Image (cartoon, rainbow, N blue to C red; front, side, top):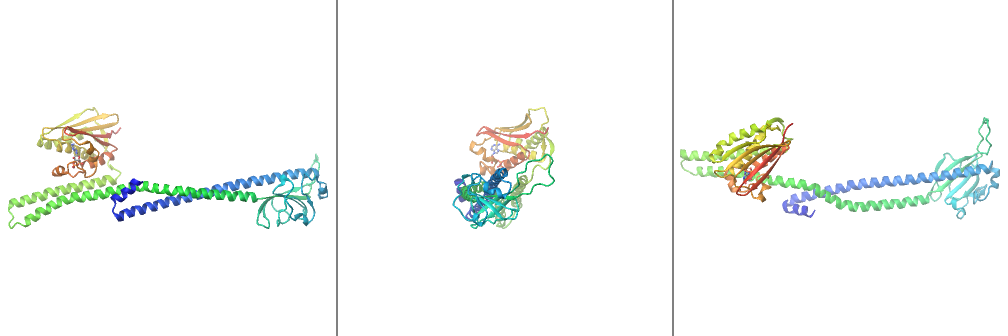
Length: 464
Ligand code: ADP
């Protein structure tokens, strides 16, 4: 991260630096925001799941208490008259009859009824008996549903389960026409106070967890934003560098043309020889400019397109012979031996754009001949290794220092700028060759010894 901040500060100008910092901040804020929302939703979902699971467990517990009591009462009771005879251990703190049974009492003496209230209500809606806790304000009424939520005066909520009590009739072999009528409702309710307290503590814990997660998410978002901005910044710097280099390359021939024209304009008379010289210079510089512009156009095309658009079978044996033929005159002029060494029986056919593959090899052979002194040797070798065709361009030239070997594939990079300019080269030859090789799913590597020569190896997949 420190490296990146340093990089932003060093390379970008002030407004650009601010723009990158601002974008990074915005990206980090978005990351943190999105993560925050996701975590909050997860926390909420978790809370709802815990609350639901607990509520279901408690409701089941109330239901089982109600069922157990119903079964016990069924054995001992046939109607409300027998309520008085109930054993005290079955329903502790039993209160029979009137409204006094709803008045508050100290805690129930029965440990198994802690938090529970029990009511027996007649079918007419009258309170027949109570046991257990006595929450204030819960109305006595005929239950309308088996499971109900009710509130007391202090807004504390309870769940209550209602079951019907039937007289204990002995089963008969022939069923009676009419089912016996229930003589009362047994209502069992339980306070949710402890449950609410537990849920409040869960809420706090989730909230604290969320805050803690957000304090971790904030630096993580900043770090992620830095990672995301790094390639953008790098390609932005490359574009800036490329624009500056291209402008510089264009300026050189333009300045040469201007200087030549200005010097001629200062002459009082222009002889035919001067005119020839001037036009010669303008023509050369114009040629250089055209080459540069067409190289730049080709590079941008290679950058943009899913290349190569043409997918035709290209015979590499024919291709290297054509190149050797085209470069023979240049080799002769430089007194360099140009050889071909085909070490495979197959035609080594690759799928791609022949014009561009020709261009790739031409750039390499042109370089080999350019950077090899008189009486040297340049060899074009074709080999096949499994499904790869290897084309080696070997020269006995000046070689490339190890520290330059990785850089020579960069756009506009030249080891010896002055010398390279004299040859009219712009430093784009290897960049174009690399882009073409990559577009054909291939690679270019270099092995070189300064003073002894270089070998550029192009590897291309053979079409099956
Ligand atoms: P240029 O257009 O200047 O030749 P290239 O991209 O083709 O640009 O090559 C980049 C640099 O790599 C050249 O300036 C040269 O210094 C070096 N180079 C390329 N090929 C060779 C070679 N065969 N022998 C020595 N140096 C080479």
